[in-house]
Length: 197
Image: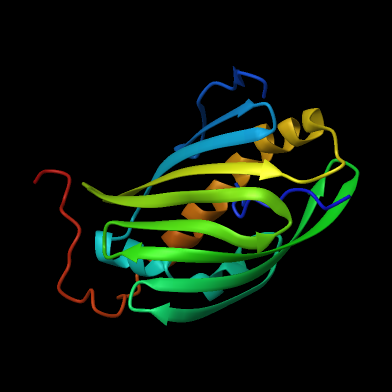
């Protein structure tokens, strides 16, 4: 009997059933489940240039600022591969769960980041972030697949996935907004296009 949810995103992050697209603070999230495999998509705008958005997403240890994340330690394996050891506490209705995972991230500067769980408390967790330039900064797009390994009934996880993910992605968007006045290393010459350009 193993633990439950983390979605980093999810964490992290329905038998042929899908929830409609939901918007909260301009965060668009779609969650669906087939059997025990969840599919997540999300998109939202942030006031960071594409380069700064990439720097934000690859600041793996800063994930400790996200709700529920207890520890996030990263080490670089090669120029474009990073391993991240992350622990999170989640509360789903009356269940409290501590989840641990080791993830491998593959970076494609400054366009996307792909990740997959190497070991951890889920049967499967993998996905990607893509970054697109926008008139007011960047648009972040997330796609992920997650299969829990838990004794908690899926209808309870459904509730968390439907309601909790909007808050999680909203927190990611909020923290990105808090960085808008900082110049990310290596991004000094990049500017955000004005709405009229």
